[in-house]
Length: 464
Image (cartoon, rainbow, N blue to C red; front, top):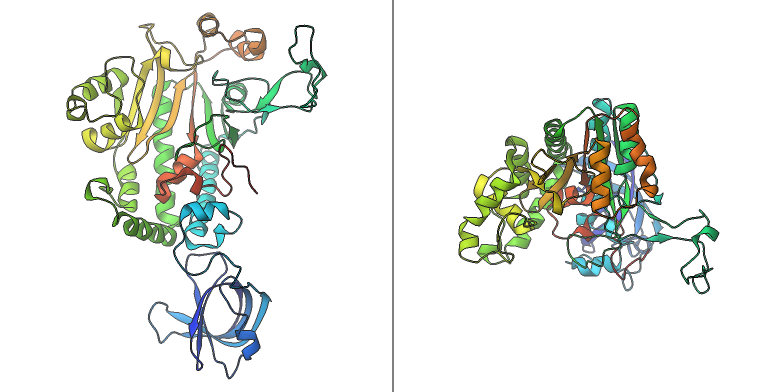
């Protein structure tokens, strides 16, 4: 059977009698082998067939005689659509460090690793929309430019059209934002949650899925300045309903990866195993990549209160032997990733949902529990990464929400639109946030969040 294929050269090997070209069009991790006979394909064409070059090949699809592939193409014609000078093309067939590949992020999707990650990123995005669509949720687009700080942390990127060198000033010397494009100070959003709540209190069940921004000067493997968040908000949901939905959602996404990304997962799992061979035995993961994914799908998530978790951690061997980097002193401690991973990987040996945190370490909008010490918050903890989801039942009672805002120094006048939802037809409601890149780290097994997004934005880096 004659076929016509187009793609990029991954490798070329051979001799004066025959050339074997590995061609890939980006649709799969698997290459198609093109067999080129120098008696059929002119020498001047074969010279241009180098790693990175793009080709159009016409030939006969036949059963392969060699190992590694079931079929191959015996080329009748090869057209070089775009050459790639091997002296200059940086992705020659050898092992490249992830640090180097981040410097050429415009080319790294052509590597096996990053093409696999980007295909899985697409699959996970589709699965998110499919899950919520099947459950009758409405997809809501919340603003990227906003005048509110949902988290109250203040780490926001300012949006302005004012002259940076000579902004208009008020009499007291402060910047006069009334002359700015929006007539007020505005920023890039840190979360679509508050606007999402407005949608839920009209449509019942909504979700957002969009970019969010944090001007947090964190140069770590877990932080980005620009990342994507999935934030469902549901009217008439209490904390228990919220936990049930989040567990169902995560299991759906992980199962989708297992069902639809088998080839890419197999490649990434082998990459991870090869990488771990170079690590000391005590630093190697106890589970393979697919074992971790099945671990989530096959186990019912353990539900534990923050108070119970603190008791478990305080009495644990790592805490008693001072092995934790951040020792657990007592109730009120904000848990670190090492504590979360201990609960999941060592103590319960299943995913964990922690709930009812001290109000002092959580946001103003979370519903106060009857003890006046804790809020109806929940975090979901996964093996290898710790927290993957954070959410809560929202505070629907106007008087308690107002008091909490005063307590935390959040100006009422700027948030009056938000308080209106508690004045007019308020209902119990809940929601949660899933950082999409955190999910991608989990399903791909990558160690650095900068390697699961096409163009990472981090302190000092806004290339491409």
